[in-house]
Image (tube, rainbow over all chains, first blue to last red; front, side):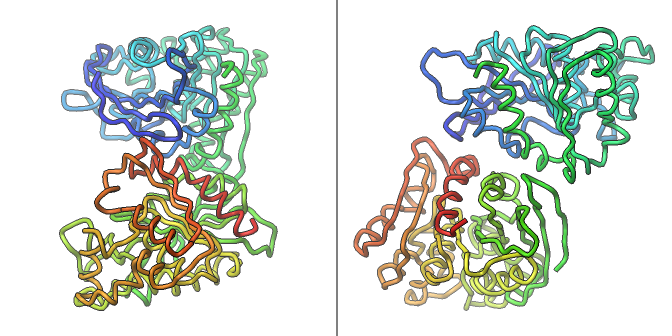
Length: 277
Length: 277
């Protein structure tokens, strides 16, 4: 692992790191914020998965998470959203290929060799982070935005014992049923829709996946709300399955980091409660 | 005035606006955050002046000021740092010309026609902001970063009745005595150093300018500390003049928005106290 930068911020260290990933076959860049802590102490960790087109940098610069993480003693990790670079297949559109890994392990050519973001964020990167940073692996949680909200929900529902809190900002809750998700799932996983169900939060809940609680913040003025995000589908699935969903619709707020940063501290407070932080 | 964008954030409206400036002879872009407020209410306003190379966008995206402004009911205005565009003289270096107006009215060719940032931020833009936004002109304060800290200090010292609080992050306190300032002042104001003194905070204090209190935050790991910023010169001038300076040196912090965002809420609390907000 190579340290690209470290800077002091909000009583902790904000770093950016690069490593050669076996899962993606590329170099991958990610950021980690570590609050000051007692020597030898192990801290809970919040995983943040970003949305379409983003790298680690968007939330690192605009997410306004550091003050709350420092207050609660939370490590905050922000991976990239896909493999990148020469030799990595791409698509001319912003919603597929580089910057749009959708947190799946691709099975379809030409994406299968590199687009393994499920393994990357659930297995390879956690192992690296645990090795290098003072993380308590028994206290992890996960959140994300838009495509990353999809990732946080599907990963949280798949590993309910590992992630003590699961939340999202404006998530894609049912990719099988919306244009962004349909394009990505057919492109990465193929035409067989049964393979899609473990990468669709609503389908996972329908198929029996459970978590103690979910928190979702959604802007009501979000351009993508009606066609791509469909929080109503999550609300309906959670009601049927008796999953404790807190869905907060915020009038006037859009899909941007101005929205995310507004409710970030609030979501982190909720995570901290569940992480015993 | 043209509205370029407005977005809901932290219980208020973050806008970006453009207008044709008479002071600079160019279009100028600036941002304004207005917290929610009672109809007809007039709010105190904090002016934020940015540093070399910045536009309004840097602090707007990375400054983390909105939560504190919403909490205190403060309007926050961020102007650009210079005129820009075709026909505006420039310099190949980052520290002079476009992006480096130094908050003076230039008298030297070819800069005098456009580089009138003193008039712009003390006169023209305040009049526009007062006309369009719900500002209480009897409750204004000013802060800034680096070159913008220089601007905040010199403007605050020049108009002590207008600005109820004056603070800075890593300011250039004595431009006449450091390379950045020397280059800018000779380029904009000419060789006669007597003209420089009203654009040099330390010289202004030596010449009798007074404010009730100054607050300065400075990172100890700032690369520009020893050569360009020299807070020791401000401390010495304030001690001699009995100006109440609070100078906080923060070990490990650099010159970036990671530093500014860490102490932004704290400076805004200090402003709010002095603005009766």
